[in-house]
Image (tube, rainbow, N blue to C red; front, top):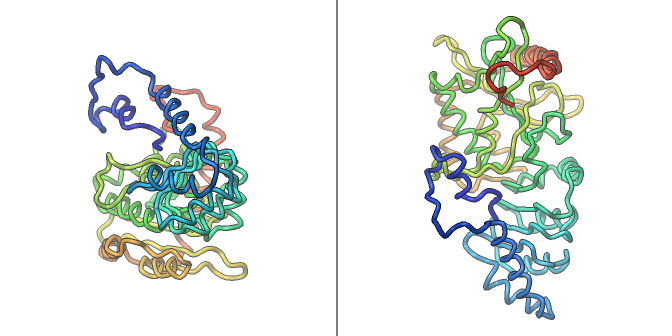
Length: 368
C-alpha cells in the first residue's frame, strides 16, 4: 500500500516524475475509492468461520510477487502469525490498519520472518514510544528489516530520542564544515546502496557543494544545522537497477552533528580538496564500556554485519561498494584529529541552533 500514489507524485513534481493528463471522467475522490475497496475486502471474510478458510482465501488474494497484503483485515495477533507461518518466505508485508497488531506481534513478525525488505505498520497499535523501546531492547533484530513504514520515522525530528543506529558524517577542511545524519535502524542492503550513491557524489568535485552547509547569515559565525541533501540520499530506498525517480522515500533521517553523543555505528568521511591530501574514511563500531572504539574498513564492516546475522543479499552490490571506496579513500589510522574537529563543528551548531530558531525569516525560505 503506497503512502503516496504515483499520480500524486506526477501532479506535485511533474519535472521529476513526468506529467499526467487528467481524464475528463476521472473526477472521483481516490480516497473514496480506497475506502470502498477496504469495505469490499472486509466483507469477503465475514462469512468465513475458521482460520483454515481464511488462509485458503488469502493465499489466492493476498499473496503476490509484490509481497503479502493483509492491510485492514480484522485478524488478531494469533491469527495473523498463524497465517504468516503457513506461507513461504516473503520480502514485503503490509499489516497496516489493524489495531490488534501491537509491539509484541510486530516483534514476533520480525523474529519469524527475517529478513524483510519492507513492512507497513501504519495505523496499528504501535506508538513512537513502543518503537523506541524495541529499538533499544532488540537492536540486532532491526538489522534484518530494510524499511518500516510508520509516521514516527517520517518526521526527521532532531530532538527525538530514537537511538543512532548508524550515523554518516562528511567532514571537510573548515572546523565548522560538516554534514551529518543518523538513522534509527538500518538494513545492510539499503545502506550499501545509500553509501554507493553518496560516495559516487563525493568523488565528483562539482557535486561536493551538495553537502556544504548553507550560511544564512554572512555577517556572523552562526551556521544553520542542515544536511538536507545528505538526508535525501539516506531516505531513498531503491534497487541497484532502479533509477533515482523510481526510489521510495519511507524514512526521514535526522540531523546529528555530535559524534560523541550516543551512536552505535559511525561512518566518517574526511574530504580534502588538495590533491596531495587523499580523502579518508573510517567505520567505527559501537562503544564498548572501558574500551576505545574500533575502526574497520568497508570489507571488515560487511563481514562484521554478516557475523551479526545480516549478510548482504546482493554480493555484487557489496563488491562494487568495496571497490569504489578502496579506489578513492584511505582508512584513517585513528580518529583523534577528525573527532576533535567534528566535536568543534557540533559545538558551533549547537550554540547557533537555538539562536537561529528565534531569527525572523529573511528572503529565501529556510531549508529545514
